[in-house]
Amino acid sequence: MRFRPRSISITSGKGGTGKTTLTANLGIALGALGKDTTILDGDLGMANLAIVLGMHKCELSFLDALTGEAEVKDVIYRNYGIKVVPMGFRFEDAHEVLTKVKRERVEEVIRELLKQTEFLLIDGAAGIQDATI
Ligand SMILES: Nc1ncnc2c1ncn2[C@@H]1O[C@H](COP(=O)(O)OP(=O)(O)OP(=O)(O)O)[C@@H](O)[C@H]1O
Ligand SMILES: [Mg+2]
Image 1 (cartoon, rainbow, N blue to C red):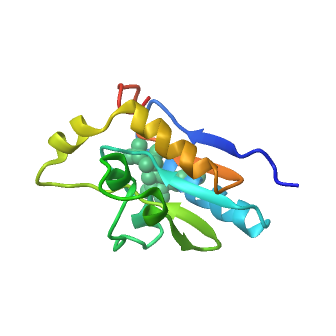
Image 2: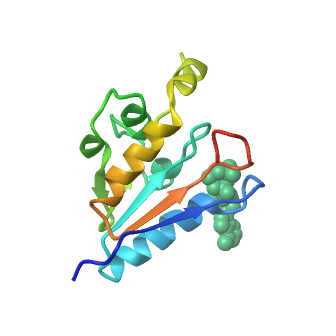
């Protein structure tokens, strides 16, 4: 029987408290237990989940799915026995891109990700600003 997917956000108000490290390690541990696991970089401002996993060369990211420039299936990468959805960062138009991201689209993409996994772990950004929530 397929379990209902679970979504777990790893958050904290302060930066540098271990959110990204915990997301990566908990995700890989769940994968090692045979759980269908996806980890998502939800840090719109300063993404680094893919970097800590040595996957910084991913061409497409969650950001591209959020702006509608990529399909959800194209931003899911497989590594370490789990699925990883990296977040992109664009130096040239970072602010402009963030203003294009709509809450409804975030929810839509997350719902799509939940359809193909048992566990979805979300590495959040520090703080309690609107974009983080
Ligand atoms: N349990 C731990 N023990 C010791 N050091 C740790 C632990 N977890 C994380 N660190 C170290 O703390 C630093 C910050 O970790 P990490 O990047 O995971 O935090 P973060 O909460 O994701 O930060 P940010 O808010 O910037 O996204 C890193 O250098 C990491 O290696
Ligand atoms: Mg982090």
